[in-house]
Image (cartoon, rainbow, N blue to C red):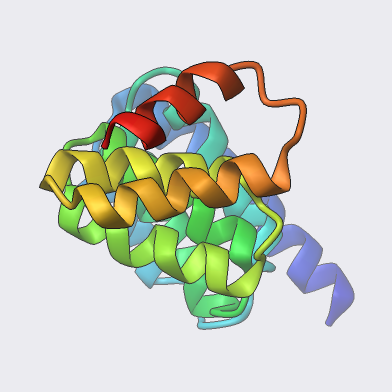
Length: 156
């Protein structure tokens, strides 16, 4: 069983490289749906989603992150990556759900809080954005934007 899983993960990795080059999220999703649920470790899919994200193919990375969640829906890092990809792809509503789940699962993820605050800003929810930036400041006393964040909180 281990050998067949290793081979399957290798095939997923190869397929993801080919499909990332093409940049076709629908085709990628078709390939990923053909893989039995739980047959590929979520970390493999999470890792495969990083390459398209880094090249600006955010919708394609979303496909990988969503599939990774189907293997492990309690992984805060996967929700963070999914929420971030959705945010930069302009899907703010979906991003909010994922980023909120990310901070529920990992309440010390400063980057998730910062991205959540950005998503909240996009919706105009100033009070929630303010509270979220407060969490960023509470969690990261060395934040490079600390003065700017504190000033924004006071002004709003």
